[in-house]
Length: 296
Image 1 (cartoon, one colour):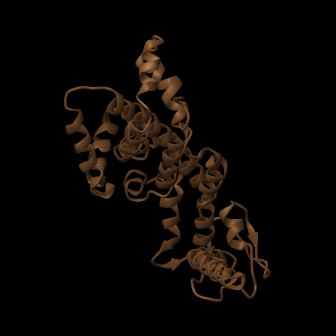
Image 2 (tube, helix red, strand yellow):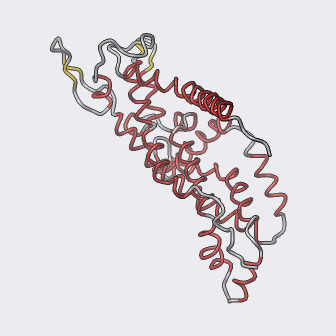
Image 3 (cartoon, one colour):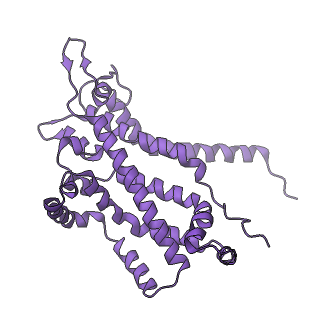
């Protein structure tokens, strides 16, 4: 029987924990830098990690409040950051729900139904998702510009147009959810058929409850991507009031003057919805819900 040296074991634990802590600090360093800039006087990108004279000016302006400097100068918010944040959340939630509905129903059909051209369609979806979405911005602009002349609410500078364009992200998620559905025991389908359940009832009452973990993951990944998406949103949204935060924050960085402090505060705000969503949905991010669903 091998006896473990307690001192050696303790040393290895300390080294391992120290290594993991250093990796976490290294990954978080860019965030700390942005947070430091948001509390720094002026709009400078360079400086100490710990500001000498921290100020709440940039945060007050980002939250839509006027800020009075020590010399009596009153600074008004240059841009509607909270409106941009709301636009990002609204578009992200609606588009993510749409992606989830389309991808789950499509994945169920590809996983459990037999029809002509099934393999060819799946292969086509896999090939399509290999190309970056930025390649479609010119086509997107031309399509929605033409649609706007017929249906104004589907034209340029409209949120429905951007949401519809985001639904193209279902290609990758169809494959992801299909793989999860394929792992569910086929005997569940047969048992449901014997009980007289239709395909929709089997999908609604059997597959969806078992697929909650992957549904939560797909929704969270979609929301994170859409909230931070820039190329398509920058082409379809031009009005200041309609911009998302990813597009609107670019207004702080115009060539005449870079407002790094205001930009940093807006950047930190953009991460709050993602953090809140993760904290809310992490209890659903569990695996093995289908384990033991079929008793031997």
